Amino acid sequence: MKSYIQSVIVDKNQTAYSLGSGSLDVFATPALVAFMENTAVKALDDLGEGMTTVGTVINVRHLKASKIGEKMTCTATLIHQEGRRYEFEITVTDSSGELTAIATHERAAVDVERFLRKLNAGKDE
Image 1 (cartoon, rainbow, N blue to C red):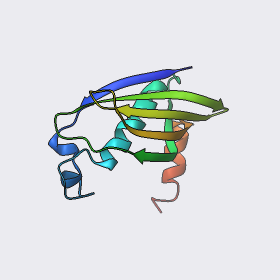
Image 2: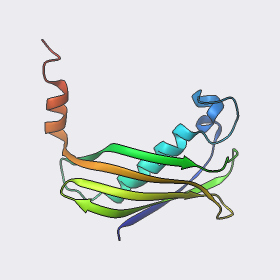
Image 3: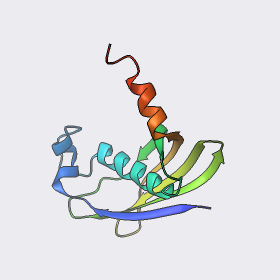
């Protein structure tokens, strides 16, 4: 199965306090979700010119807090693909290998020009 793995070191800009999702200097759930989505996006880098994916569903369980300076590793594994829809299982572990988050995530392949044209239709009127 197709997978992509990447790591990040938690910094102050990714904390709940900095992002406004909480009052503590720990890895924020919104930053975690963005990290997970970005890993899935990179797993689909080979869709072809003019194509990209958009997130359609994410179901996350943030299991453990992580402090500034902690190395987080995310693995996104494609578990199902049907037509233009892709479904991933995603895990995030800390530097000790402990599971800190799990998710299922779905993305849809889109033609960039067509997507933007539909998005902007009628906005100039």
